[in-house]
Length: 381
Ligand SMILES: Cc1cc2nc3c(=O)[nH]c(=O)nc-3n(C[C@H](O)[C@H](O)[C@H](O)COP(=O)(O)O)c2cc1C
Ligand SMILES: CCCCC(=O)C(=O)O
Image (cartoon, rainbow, N blue to C red; front, side, top):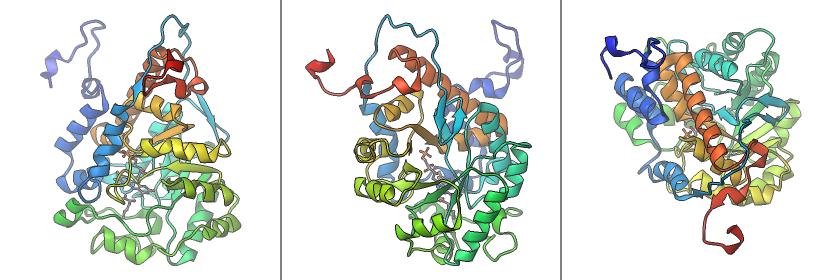
């Protein structure tokens, strides 16, 4: 980092802030590691067990090559998309991640302000440190706070009540997480004896014995979450709400077919940021197989390992309608609160725009598998 007096942009003579020195997602992660308490950083960063899938989620993207195109008019590149009735400025949405107040003072409220400013959707976690209502209020009058991620509790009444509150507060879809009958084993959380820092609580359950995490994350989830959930429970959820339902955590083409059979409104291809089954494939590796089964019946969203604009292109090319990012927003929030999340989203979207110009596409809809240079195939030449 340069000394303060040198923090002046040579070209514009404008005073630079700390955020100006973070120009890619990796810069944010390095800084977040410096400033977060070890227990929080480790919880946020970890994958399960040997973290094989964690590495794979990122590195598989690097093995996919993109084909540059020349002399295409790319003077009007746009990253706007339309998904489930939302007009967004970017195909990069924010994944649900728990306990955001360990990263910034106002946690989920800071993140939702960033999403509103950028023109994208935030998905609020059930296990948030701000309540459904607080986040709705922070998102501003008259506009939807975004989507809500649902964990189904053993006591179904708790989930039903939560759904009622979510509807009342104006969220526009439910994201049902289907990959977490139990929590994956993240070694660092065990070693650190993870607990919520003093003064923080799972705010959606403030009146219930569910608002604290004594005894560790895995015990909490094993005690509270309904591990008997099956596909027929999509029908149960459908019977208690009119909100669109997306299922998050689909990694098998057969499950994608079941999701369509059960009339979900969207599928999120996700391995939970490699925090559940270690040695499961990366999400980008399974995406084409899922897209092949879904055949455009519902939107497909991918998350896991997106760290570059080119990663977004690869996901869109291989069958996703949009992507979600988790950890990049964690690092942004930790380093700069709302402004930090805005910066991370803008960095990724700017990288996406630039790469779109290089592959010769002006709109998100024009991105298809032709942009992938995989094997030498004469049809590509
Ligand atoms: C710290 C952390 C907390 C998470 N909490 C939740 C959660 O409460 N609910 C959920 O469905 N997914 C949760 N996830 C998974 C994310 O929604 C998402 O699938 C994942 O972070 C995407 O991978 P990425 O971090 O590589 O972008 C969490 C992920 C992280 C890293
Ligand atoms: C008890 C918090 C679990 C949240 C979660 O889904 C995760 O950490 O991956």
